[in-house]
Image 1: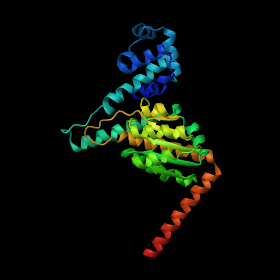
Image 2: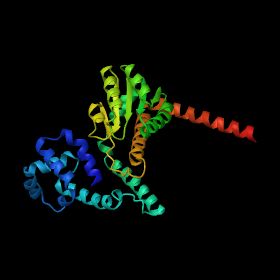
Image 3: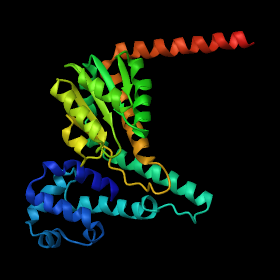
Image 4: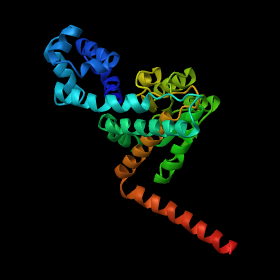
Length: 286
């Protein structure tokens, strides 16, 4: 169900009122849907059968049967893997297994909706950017710093802003032609929302990697939904970080392809320089 719920959340703002009612019902009661006919679902929600079919097609499925088949394939894994919360009574082996299985499921879920994420649009926006700023707080700040490590080798000036003063000051001098990429697990930090809005007001482009229903997502020009359900009772959010890292990897590859030969030249040059440095150090050490 997880992948289907991500698609619904991503598309929800684009749905008609009647389609939204169907979508909300599916999100609240996914299991009974698999046993319903299109007519039964329509009567239960109080809409017409064509509305249900139209919603399924808008979400990328051929029809209601195709949607139900996809729903069935996702319900079982989610119930047995993603929702297995870690307990203090778990053995260390079981706790580790739950964490790894949950991480794997989250990555598979985002992969299954990748066709709905704006990779091409983001690549074109970043391709023309004069400067890229990756912003995030806490654990998301580490993701932002990792992004700089990936993107600077393509030859586009970029940097990270990972504390509140730096983020706010960076936003205050944002200019047209710059692109700010905000990373946030919750999407509700007031400082990030304030900074993003200021960037937009001053003509900079904004991209958010966050929950699709968050205030940050609503304010951003472009959104990569990171709707990850994770148990944070016993450990720091990890699934959302892995999903954000994977999405940024995919954006970087998309950007490299869009840039073409210049990106290849820069990547080869940076790799060659690093190899020479390693060889020089090895010679000195020997």
